[in-house]
Length: 147
Image 1 (cartoon, rainbow, N blue to C red):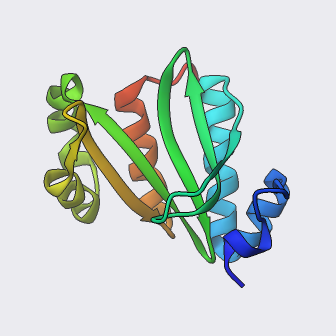
Image 2: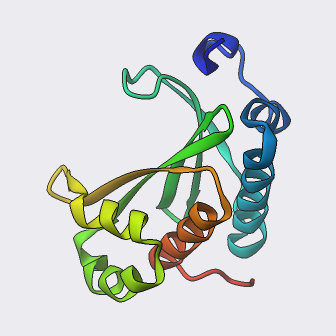
């Protein structure tokens, strides 16, 4: 059964239910990322429902001081992340690219324009490499307060 069908708009999932839905090793990656954001950035997840045809259903957003770190979409055995990088961050992103996996770096290089404000990047996390890439990308938006 699909995520949007298990948790319709009227039934907001808990963070535990999100982790359970993701399942397997990816569930541990999810929990690690949430903990990283809560501890390193002192932010809490915000659940939001989207009727967007691309990824309908509940998603999780992390924001601090008006800075959006990304939108996270639960999937079975993985989760996807949508991040928007302002063109102001382009020099930092170019420095970061060699530190990313070749797949993520290539996705960034090919990323499309987001409303003339920056590049949008959607990628899937299903292993530790994807998780570490996500953390590096988040650090470009704002360095963590602690590790």
